[in-house]
Length: 470
Ligand SMILES: Nc1nc2c(ncn2[C@@H]2O[C@H](COP(=O)(O)OP(=O)(O)OP(=O)(O)O)[C@@H](O)[C@H]2O)c(=O)[nH]1
Ligand SMILES: [Mg+2]
Image (cartoon, rainbow, N blue to C red):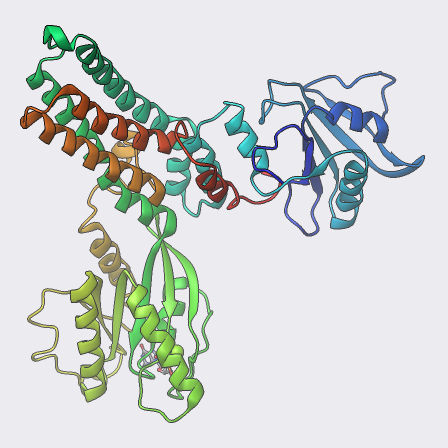
């Protein structure tokens, strides 16, 4: 099955599996009207479907009625894929939708692969690649803010920006190529200082986009917030308090949590993935030991770590060991640490003489059991993520373009290198041909983002992440 096989008519159930009010089956391609003629009887006595209008009728197989349905015909090119498309809304429930899909397949369509509808929209020029990717992002959006960004991409803001940058490059390249044509006359159609100025502006724009990635990633993938500490200090209680739900089991037996628990959490519009872990402790128990190994993995993947301590006890060697591990990790990969002193409803015993005090990190005192101090904890978490990303969530930057895809980041970084090389070539008074090579490379790098220059392999990779029917 070739990826660019665009002639066949495709079909898929577009709604999620399971029971629901309605299910929608989608078809796209030249054959859709022929197929529907064989399986659909319109309640109105009309010969052909009226486009962009809902048609009520029955799906029949061998003159047996399968379901009463609505059929909408999107005539090309005014459809999602720019091909003839039909959507059948049938009664919810897998069985009916599957029966209808099977009937469609028997009558000449083939099953669509994931993302194939959107891929056709791209290949038929209705949307560019960054917009297609944004469709997938929109479907997976977890917060208001990530929704906003994907909508921005779907509207084509990223596309417009990249296209502008490419235009400016194409303009410079064509002037340089003219010089090559008139090489004997030794003409300069583009003053070198002017060219450097243009490229410097371009670099600045690239820089802005590149630096937006960190925010984009935080917004779309979430911040990994991991709760770590000795056994029995109240990690699971804090987990529940932050989630405002009794998710994790809490007991007074050390070693209650043995596996990793993860849940989505929204603090002031930022999307977190909150992780509860097995407490560190010396143990012979194999299950517990495995739990601790998993905790270590989570520590390495964390963006923020809450080190929980029991305020009603003395500071122990185990606490110290954990502290050392955490400090090591935070030095290596700049994880943010927050010390949380729990059980402050009891008499405070812990002394933090030389513990975390000298480091410039937040120490928050709470009672998870009485849900006291949780607001302050949320604040500290929020602040530590904002410290490096001040303007993340302000409304003013809603017009600023934010990139969220590693793929885009890599292309932009390559373009940055090519343009830097071009500038160096100009400074070294290299001939126009050489400068042009670098600029063309940058042009291709930027083209990859919107899909002007892209390999089949990358395309495949992008579209197979979609769900079926999209
Ligand atoms: N007094 C008091 N007790 C608490 C507080 N938070 C938790 N506890 C108690 O401490 C005990 C352990 O709590 P957990 O939340 O299970 O602790 P944990 O760190 O998840 O423990 P493990 O999963 O075994 O590592 C339970 O009996 C809790 O009720 C608190 O703020 N104050
Ligand atoms: Mg626990």
